[in-house]
Length: 407
Image (cartoon, rainbow, N blue to C red; front, top):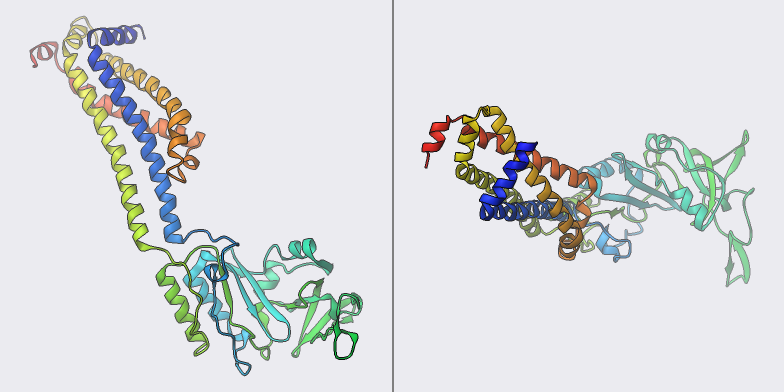
């Protein structure tokens, strides 16, 4: 360590200009590394948003985040949800992770509500929680994932269809013509058998695992729909991310395939811009190039420094310093400088530059964490250490006379 300190002191004293050039170049290099990492991560996020589509806000207008058609189904439409399993599978193949929910409204107050989870279409996880929070959950529980996906004969039914939970004030409406309150006409009445409640929906018996007060709707698994139930409106696919033009085209073709002459007027969607993807990819490669140039810059500077100090190296060797020991002294000397420079750059970056650049690059500040800084430091030190050893080896293994004669 004593030789390293002496060597460093002589370096500053005898080659002051070169020393400050080394410091300045390394300051710029380290800050460029931070900048290139931040820009790369920023544009990586931008590219992901462009490829996957930006996240869609619930407050955006309907046509922006729902894939659906404007026209309603005609009264005589003969479309049966029992035959739509393959349609749902193809929607997954086209859109996949961009699906938030798929909602299908059927006649006779039967609805199919599904969300995309774990690669499957399952009943919304938050359904029971939301009903309890905003409405009234009178009895039971929601579907399990297995019940819903396997198409078991279970049902979540409106409370008004069950005599035990029927409330005239809630489950009735005022008939202006008759001038009295009239109970809602529930198409399927619940009945009890062996301490369980059931409803018979078009010839198929379903166990009522829950009763709730909200929409007067019946919910059953889409894999076990009665054949006689008809569709009231074409399925609505609610999206989490924007579609690409190709995905949008495939979805329109799919609707036209399954619902011919019924899906000719689609809501206009905001689609992914392919030019943005090209732009963001270009910026990412520029950022990577900056990092590579910074490493080359470091190698060239150290090569120059060693060339200027060949006489001192020759003296070291003449006085018995082995080539390996000389290599360690020079490498550790440079590494000491680099560690100090990195610490200074880290302070400058966190305190001043990052907050400023964060106003320009939306995702840059979020890209930096303690782990990110540690990884950048380790990469910087490791690459620098390898470069230093490669460069110094060819000098320290020269004989002293060769070093003195070299120009």
